[in-house]
Image 1 (cartoon, rainbow, N blue to C red):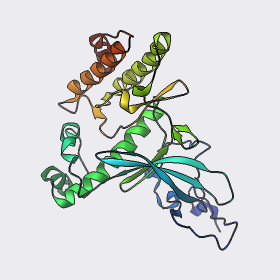
Image 2 (image 1 turned 180 degrees about the vertical axis):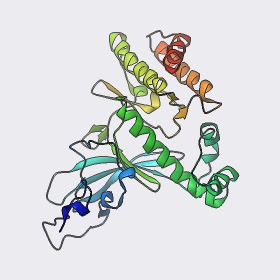
Image 3 (image 1 turned 30 degrees about the vertical axis):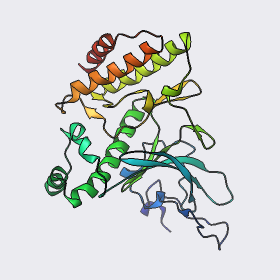
Amino acid sequence: MNPSVFGDDFVVPTFTFADVEPGAGQRWSTWPSTTPTERGPRPWPDWVVTSAAAMDTELGILKTGKEADVFLLERAVPGESGSVLAAKRYRSTEHRDFHRSSVYREGRRVRRSRDQRAIERGTTYGAGLAAVTWSLAEFDALGRMYERGIAVPYPVQVSGTEMLMEFIGDGTVAAPRLAQSTATGRELAGLYAQVAEILLGFARAGCAHGDLSPYNLLVHHGRVVAIDLPQLVDVVANPNGMALLERDCRNVGEWFTRRGHRVEAGELFALALGELF
């Protein structure tokens, strides 16, 4: 076999047991069937399992949402240790809440004009396409923000309406949301500094999270991580961008102020504008 025929990320399938087959709640790893553009930024973290001999095992559901559900999945070669991933799966044609996305979708385009028209008209075809569009949008947003050093989960891969990403937690227990935090005083100040840096990091990239709140910020061993990025907006290209950025600042400021750490949302917004321009 001539190795020059294959890319440098090609992994030769190796199977320890010839009779190993996926059982209930299992499948062969979908990594080998993804293209390079459907995989996370390189270099891949050491915990990313790339072997074609790996299996994906369903471990249960983490969260149900209006647009998508998040499941827990273990990817490992049988007999070896693997990694636990969060599998976000967007719903498609029957979903009734994708109409809420129009405020975030302005300024975005899909490649084919036919697809763009279908999404805008809300046809059955367009509704199915919208789910794929949102999974791709979140995967792209996570990749870009991760490469900038912003605290977000590493995006492992995307395939259709499913996106696999780094699981933020310990074992199979997810990290708590900021909204669940009982921090006070100096602890709150440290958490706010991290949240502000995330928000300003988005602004530095010309973006707003669009829905930033204590419910999509996780706290893992004192480290704040932003999640739920499908609606990340380009503040300049989206006519709603500035209002969404201001709302992010207001949500953050009001929550910390209620908890006893006073934050002037207007000052935070001014800082974000400074990073933006």
